Amino acid sequence: MRISAKAEYACIAVFELAVNHAEPHPVRVKAIADAHDIPQRFLVQILLQLKAVGLVESVRGASGGYQLARPPEEISLADVINAIDQVATPSSRKTSPKRRNPVVPMNSAGVHALRAIWREIDLEQQRLLEATTFADLVRRTQLDSGLSYQI
Image 1 (cartoon, one colour):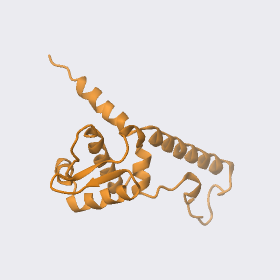
Image 2 (cartoon, rainbow, N blue to C red):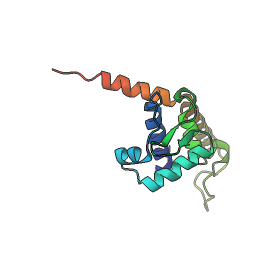
Image 3 (cartoon, helix red, strand yellow):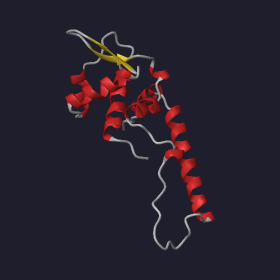
Image 4 (tube, one colour):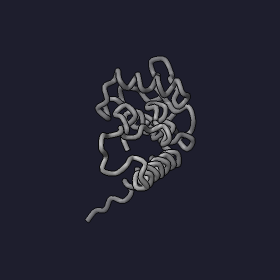
């Protein structure tokens, strides 16, 4: 799976907004950028892109910033990644270029079987991204931090 740096930054930003969803104040861009070493100008562009598709909303003013437009239970990883990267669907993926004198004919049963597996992997990947919400990710971090042992 390949996710662009921009999509990963977008997921980090939405995660931060999800963690702070219950807070009355929006999260400042500078706080997210500083906490995760994301260039602030780049983060603003990402947040504007997420705002354009209705995933986040901005609050203007001295105590302004960004917050989720919907509860974290209603925003999946797929929502964010697809908003940032135009993800190619399995059927739109380009096939490998034809080579001269291939050892295995490009229309062989083996090639068809491989391509079927690639499509299955793509579909399962998309299913997992759609099924995982930011509320799930917040719960995972809370569980992970609660599992620290001391001796």
